[in-house]
Length: 618
Image 1 (tube, rainbow, N blue to C red):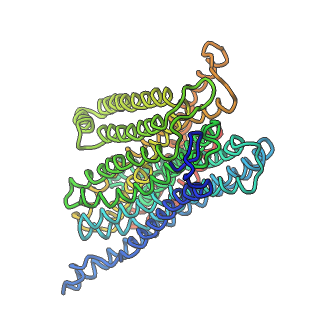
Image 2: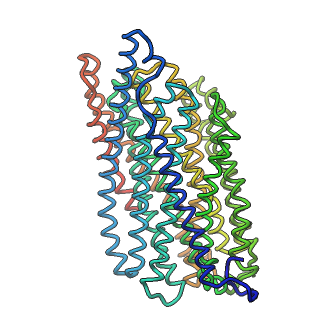
Image 3: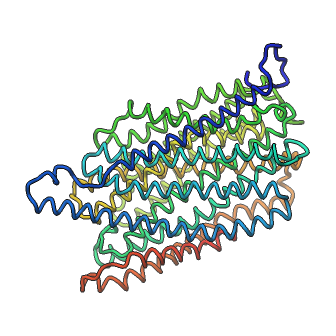
């Protein structure tokens, strides 16, 4: 085995220093490999030259050549506007976040000390860095996806998935490296009474990541929906324009919003869940007298995420062999195949890591049964396979290939009201299987390993996060590609291919949300468990009026939060709608150019202004 543990080791066992070095290599090398692969994919995307369709440019017809060159020029111009809008939003949002980080750091340093504050700042800055990288690659890849769809479906899909890979691999790799470096720095430069105190301070890393996730998700979500609703209402209802019609002033803001919400927002959300679940598992592992003296056993949660990067790389290779994209139906199969392959490949990795990193048997504290190594492996696999099931259930209820979406489409033929009612009913039904999966995971994992098992279940669900983020980032990239094709006036065949990629991307975006919500549920319980272990709370009496009142308040919070965010979306969308309606008369009657930048600015200001109240509530 790799770890030194209470079991009896032979005299030929390797030294503790050798074991520690092996663990360090197993954590660091996969993360560095993930960054190198991200750089490789970035270079592959950057090699795509936006120079037009070769068949058109090769024609002798000068008019056809001039038309193709004009479309290329328009594509580049539109992509640049989307890029500038996305980065201007990020700059404004991160300015707000910087103020929050400074102010909250002062509070933390007063009440918890320097170590927790350092961990909080590192977590927040890491989350911001990951969001920035994701946004840069998304707005860099979208126009290249459009260009490659002008050639053929396979080329367009490959570029979009390569862009998604950069985000998925780089986010997890940077997260693992930052957390591991933080642990090593705390061991070297800070003096702690015991491992429990050190890992409790490191939990600030998760707090920093989740704080940025809150603002990224809320601010980005308000921006996304405000721009989307504003573009739809102003263009379609009053002038019969498509949302991606270049004459619609909100069309660029709408495309920016896709990146803001589903790239920066979702990335920060999943990063926050990853950071919190890993920190919770570290705190719980450090509370075990049998695990805290073994570096290998303590690093077991980090090793799970690190080896998940290698699994992601293998998945990409296997996917290209098993699910090549040659025709329209194969796009959705390829994306679903990524989830299945990564889950299958991760399963034996979990078993091997558990066997060689953990003692045969250990205790998680007084009052808990003895834990065997395979109990931990089972807890992780419960989360891992529950994530796949939740992903498939989400896909079933959101894909046009299955009955639920088609049934809603049929009911819409009668009236919009019946479609809304039927859609809401199916939305409620879609919660049943995921909740059962989460309940089974929590019950079995807790009975096997206590709260440590719940934290491992959350890590298991996030074990394939590299691929979940890859297919999640693929969605807005392909959506933007369709918008650019429409606005640049590319042939209908190109828009047909981008719509195919986008339809599959919409489904995969929903799958990403399922992962985020499911893992967040497990993470919240794991964090609560870590708190109860450190606070030595053995049980909670639900008949205690304070406890019951707290439950009622907790149940009320999501409704209050949802109400405020929905009001914020309505207010921001109204601002966008007013601006669009003020521009349309000159655009439609006098041929004036739409002021895209003003709509982007309005949506940015409104979303950042309106996110303050929901953020303060949390």
